[in-house]
Length: 281
Length: 121
Image 1 (tube, each protein chain N blue to C red):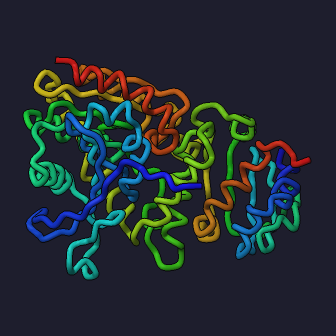
Image 2 (image 1 turned 120 degrees about the horizontal axis):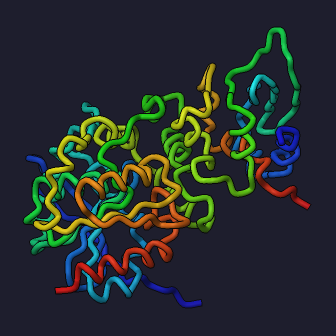
């Protein structure tokens, strides 16, 4: 059997990010409107493998997925060994804008899931004029911690296994087993303390409840898509953001917290109508 | 349903392998009815029903019968698919020494959810 090659290209980019030199890995496929995709906490850009391979999307959109510093194939900044990684709202917003600038993207669409679904709310609030549209997957204005986060990073518990164990229940029970376990595999490969450091943004620093009402979707359209099985960023939390911003929200049946990774085909069926609206003049 | 756990787990070689370093006794509490499950190298080696005078176990998962019954349905309703979905809604309490539970979370999640599955023929 001859090998089959995917239409994805991956490259390393050296750039100044958050005031420090960084080596960042990103993948892209397709042409047209730039669509920057943001992965979840403690994972990496492989979550968007289905989108990067889907010609229904890539025929009109240049899909760009970068691994955040500390994640996937991107390196942590030099000197990381003496620091505790903690993602803040300020750094996260800045990172996305700086990556978009470095790639010279003209009014890209940004789509993020979970922490990415939260940060698009920050982008909508702080930088509405820099984006053509924003898509929040599993968006909530805030998520309360519901377990002791210190379990995620201690030497007597395997970090990869406990992180995968914590998120496994967020995946819909009806999705294909191979996609579920691929999604968990990414979590098992996360660096020590990275998931916990991302959750600092998700559960503490990134709380945007007090500013959601100020988001103006006329300046930058915002679309919300949430899986019905997500008990972390709940459908109620997404519908609350929708109510307070006027953004259209869709609850996706048969999907959980990682829609693009746990069942890419089903997710794309929900995403395509949104992308069509964004493309429409 | 709890009586199904031993057969389901012990017949699942992949799950037993995942739990091959687990040696502990934990408790499942359904209302005030308590059951101790002894795990030895990933296999369920003993199931003992209470009441107990001095139960000796590492951790306990406690919920009402109504919650457990929903959790153990083959396809549980929304909000009942995972232990931490229940914990978040304060429908379940996990108490005691959580180390063996958290260090083997994927194992214990599947052990505890095993009554959902059809028996292997």
